[in-house]
Image (tube, rainbow, N blue to C red):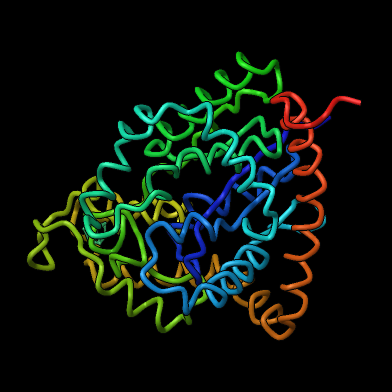
Amino acid sequence: MKQRVFSGARPTGRQHIGNYIGAIENYVKLQEKFDCIYCIVDIHALTTIESTSELQQNIFEMTLDWLAAGIDPKKSIVFVQSHVPEVTELFTYLGMVTPLGWLLRVPTFKEKARMQPENINYGLVGYPVLMAADIVLYKSNVVPVGEDQLPHLEMTREIVRRFNFLFGDTFPEPQAKLTNYPLVLGLDGAQKMGKSYGNHIELAATPEETLAGVKTAVTDPARQRRYDKGHPEICNVFSLHKFFNIDRTQEIEVQCRSAEIGCVDCKKLLADGINHALKDFRARRSALAKDPDHIYDVLADGAQRAQKIASETLHEVKTKMGLVRNA
Ligand code: SF4
């Protein structure tokens, strides 16, 4: 039997090239070796969201991007977290075996509490427990993560160990699978690429929008004039070339160091590389967008398949916890 991969991502709408490099490309590859479950975690989004008015549209756009990128709903389960409500029941049970002290020490909780002091809600504290419920509800073995998410996964492993100790062997301890590109910087070259920073390029952008975005990218500050020699190792445009212009990386590096190429031309090359790499994706996305019912069917089918696994796990959990009368 194949090992099971679980990954959840917040419904952030149209995906950007950072999402693609850091996660989606990996999702697509993992499908060949693993039994994969990809979940849009809308309940998690509620812990920090200010308005839910765009939530449904964001779920739709994100699903569209995932499918256009090659996540295959025949191979993988693609669904929305709240469509399988068993997760909230398991969240409650796991909450009973998770000491509050563990949760209050989580660095991201402290950071979020600092960022939204007027809204330190219960969901924010319980976030790692809900994440554990997401993973173990499907008895997942492997979780693709960036390095910044390792502490969360360790918390899941601790909860699993505690549950298994108290109620008997039930869940596998999920292992981390680090992504190849743990950090993709945004066009500002300073922060992780993200919509909230406005430093991103959407996968579905037009070639013109892509070029306009790339033109704003921060480069090596030493290159004030065309003939100044550059340092590609500190330039994020160069980092993106490594992904989108892999065959030309060496040549660009030499040309930058010797000032044979200027940043304007270098950025044009990057935009061309991105547009070339995403040409098929964009065509598939346009075709899929013409049939919204198909997207909703995929999510409904995914929820049904996920729920089958979830209800079996939940029955086992309730039995082991003494919540079900033994026959
Ligand atoms: Fe960066 Fe390219 Fe300019 Fe070199 S030439 S500093 S790699 S944008």
